[in-house]
Image (cartoon, rainbow, N blue to C red; front, side, top):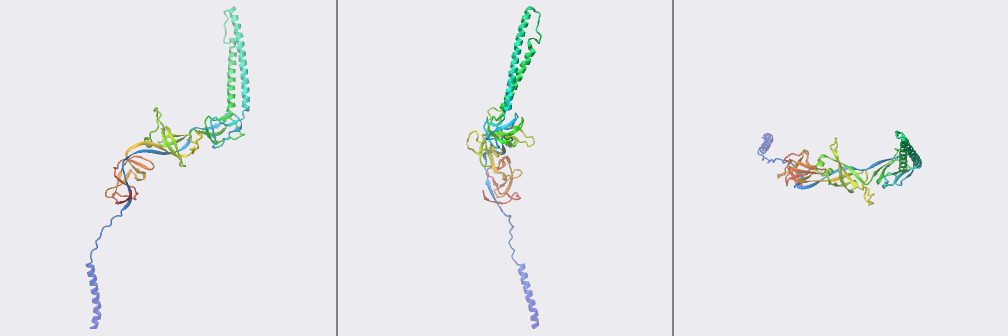
Length: 385
């Protein structure tokens, strides 16, 4: 009996435990499963409204001189004097003597040609007197013999022609020699700056020897490249029409200084390769040298940005340029807080803004936050405007 109890009792306990475990497993309550929702994206947005916009076109260019001259010597000689401002960057006024070449040989040549002119004039007077006497003798002879006629060589015509030619040649030599004396002094007809000095005091120069490169400072110019789209948005001066006015522009450089200028002309032809039209902006007295005012100079060679006022756009929507996606698409947030792609028509775009003429309506909410791999219908939550 004790043996049966010892063997059977553990078996009964094991079977009872298995039965209870199976009953609990079969009768366990079912868990309520909810489908997981996709994560909501947090985005910034703003509501667009149509407006009238005065657009401007910003282009860049380099300040260049309107007039630049390479000075060369027209006479031979040694440089005996230079201006105190004859150095790279030196200013000079109109009519200032920049260089003086030794004029002594040219003065001597002038006196020689003047003496030759006196001799030629004297010879002409002598030939004229001889011709007068010869004509008198001929008239006296003709009075006694009416059949006498004058030939082409009578009255010293050839001698007179030669004497006249000698006088003209001598006068030309005097003019040339006097010009050489004047050209020994190098002057410029405009106020300017020495860009590059190429000669020194005491140097011997020949005709054609480069002396310096100078440029005028009455005004400077900036050559501005404009695309065909930009040209359509600007009222550029048309000098074929009487009374066409220049366009005022604002010029800024690296120093944050702003200068005023104006578009005075266009080059009139498109670049065959780039399809670019170049407009010319002019700045008066860029160094302030002529006015004597203490102003920030707009130096030649400065790279500047030029803002050109353009035409007005009516009833357009303004968005930041980065919001416009490839294919002229923007992401709209609908009433269900889901994003939708919308194709728009671009009226104009610059580096910062895009101006939409159609495809949007007043009150549309534009998604500003960039979304990686966006899908139409994605749920978003607006956290800021």
